[in-house]
Length: 145
Image 1 (cartoon, helix red, strand yellow):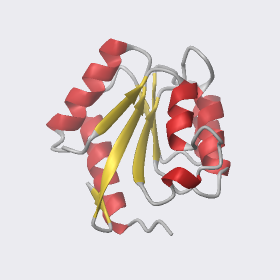
Image 2 (cartoon, one colour; image 1 turned 180 degrees about the horizontal axis):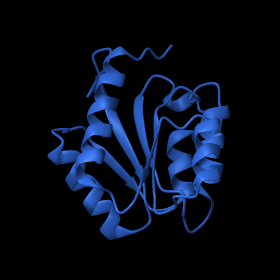
Image 3 (cartoon, rainbow, N blue to C red; image 1 turned 60 degrees about the horizontal axis):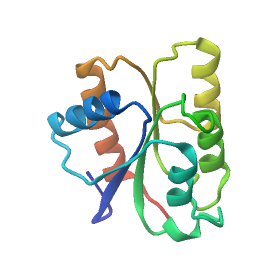
Image 4 (cartoon, rainbow, N blue to C red; image 1 turned 120 degrees about the horizontal axis):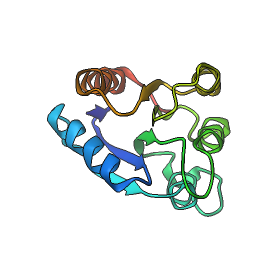
């Protein structure tokens, strides 16, 4: 998975170690060998994505794909999604929601905030692999200014 010749780093924000291992295994089985940076809480993930100053400028030249759980120990994934999508430097980053919640209202809210894909856990391998492949195609045509 590459974006305009630059390698894409997958940022996985998932506090459940078993789910994190399963997600990584499925990403690898889908033929994606990009680096995966795991985070178990929202604060450290946002420190990486937006920087400690929360300006987002530090990552503006990096290609990131964010795999985001909505149920985290320190903050809601919806808050993280909103912070990423309202920041001018990170608003175009693709975000895949991976969560146990299949509440229609929450799903719609995530899409309204700019989520690219919403996948309900436990992850059904074929749909997950298909979504990851589609994101690979998405990355091949995506332009980040």
